[in-house]
Each structure stands twice: as structure tokens, then as C-alpha cells.
Amino acid sequence: MRKLLIGITVTTILFCLFLIYNHKQLPTKDDVYKITGNWSPKTKEVYLVKKIDDDWLTIFRNKQFILVGRLEQNWLGFWQLQDDIGREGSLVSVYYPPSRQDEEFTWSGAGTEEGAYYFGQIINPDIKKIQVVTKKNSFENALIMSAEGTRFFFIKSEEELVMPVNIKGFSKNGKLIYSSFKQVN
Image (tube, rainbow, N blue to C red; front, side, top):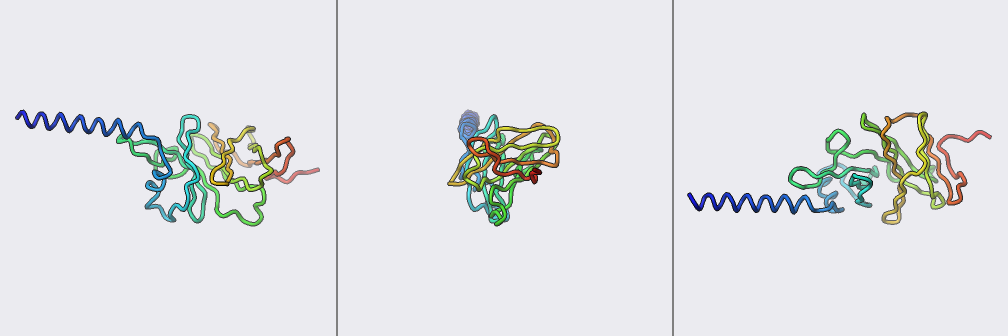
């Protein structure tokens, strides 16, 4: 009986140490490859894994899309990609590779009851600032991230996705380079 109690105690201690160790691990690109290993199409490249505000986000691509996902730990401490309602999946994506007419950037928006996401790949190197304008609001400073020689922008809004959306790209000195709406002179 004593050996059984010692065995249970040792097992419990080891399991608790395992949980503590796992919960202290930060997510890595390898975690994203593991999580998406059974996705079709397969993940070709993970651009970055970064903590933004209170969320761990990753940007990765397969042969058809560049995706943004939120990484969350399960109760065992393993990382998972989850959307806003807790299912496995991405938050927002844009097609890959960009088409020939996408000289400035590609973009997409996605939303749930929790809010909206605006994301894209910046192709024109002169674009230094992105502004997202909806019917209800204007988001001035999109987060611009560089990874593996590629630049992306990302905005998370607490508001619902509202169309139409005008995405504007500006130069370093504030000159409008691109607008997804045609400018009327």
C-alpha cells in the first residue's frame, strides 16, 4: 500500500511539473508547422510568431493563402490555432501569390460577433502606413510587420465587419499612394 501511495505521489508531482513546464513555453514556428501538419493544403512557410497586445499571432502560408492565426494554449499547455469562437482555424487570410494587378498590396477582412480583422501583404516598398476606413470608423495606424523579406499589415477591431472598406496606403511623408476606392478629382 505504501508503494502505491508513493507511486501516485511521484506520478502526480511529475504530471504537475510537466504542466508547469508546458505552460511556460512560448510558441514557435515549429508549433505552427505541427498544428497545421494535417491541414490541406500543407503549410509551406511560417513568416512569424509574435505577441501582439494580449494575443500570440502567427502569419503563415500554404500554396493558396497567407493566413493569420491566434495561438492559444490548451489545458495541457500545448499550442493550438483558434478562431474567435474557439474552433481550430485562422482569423483572416489573403490569396497567395498576389496577382499581377496587385502592385500595391493585397488585403482581406473577416469578422465575427467578437470583432473584425483586416489583414494584407504590402507589396509596394514605398507604402509605410496603412489606413482602414469603414462606414463607421477609421483605423489610422495599422500594425506593419516585416518577416522573411515580406511586409504585412494587421488591424483588430472590436467593431463588427462593416463594408465597404477603403484601404489606403501612404508614403513615409504622408502622400497617398493607393486607395482601394477610386479617387474622384
